[in-house]
Length: 317
Image 1 (tube, rainbow, N blue to C red):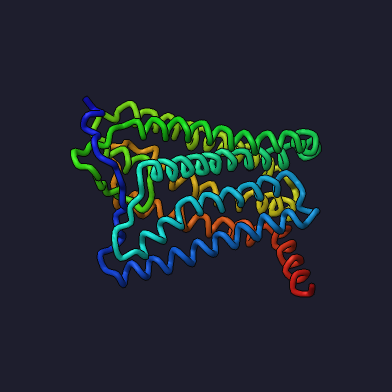
Image 2: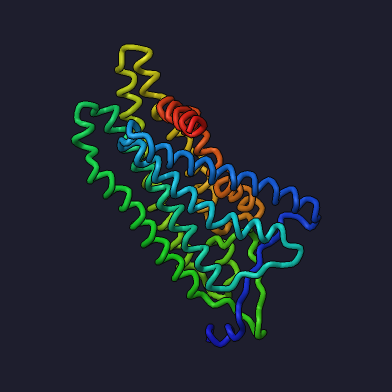
């Protein structure tokens, strides 16, 4: 019965931010600047860590992985969004194209969140067990944790995307055009276009959100409880400041990433607002990837010094 209704070819288009071309052009320029800054910032961090052997430690290994994830994550959304915003006519995306974008968005976003939890564990070991740090955080374990975040993200993304795109998007026309109330193919806006009961799909999305957002966030919180207790035991003010400075940048990134994700995916789907979704999505797809390199480079003295040395070396060569 459901498949009988899905007779036409389904295409999607994204809801424009504004009907005014001038406003659309301003949004395009702002998004383009943020995307370029994000890419250049994250590329710089990953290259600096790779070039400087003094930064070949577990903490910077995970940071380089996070930077690469941010590059891929931004590039999943930004190019298509920029083309859509700049276009004077409606840009269409096919059903397989929308599914592909959704898969990579969930995959990279999930891996990003899980990797932040791994980075919290690394800081916990470094501060609470400094004498056993090199033994506990072996390179083999670091690689396994980084790959584990990718594998778990891949599995969750594949299952959720396949489940969503098994839904019927009904059409009696040969070619049907459906408007997504966002600037990319996200789960909730696409799910709302289906002409079938989505209760199972909403429950699955909630379970995935618990795995990707709630559990890692609880583990991060627990890690920082132990970290805070360990920092308070440090007698010298300089020692406390140094220990805190290695965690503050990571904690800021965690609050940005998990705060935005929680506002969208941990709220009941019945309370989902396209307008709120639009604003929050801009934050975690464009603004957060810009802020992360700035947060880590400005708050981390080792990384800041390495960036300066690399730039001087590049200018003198």
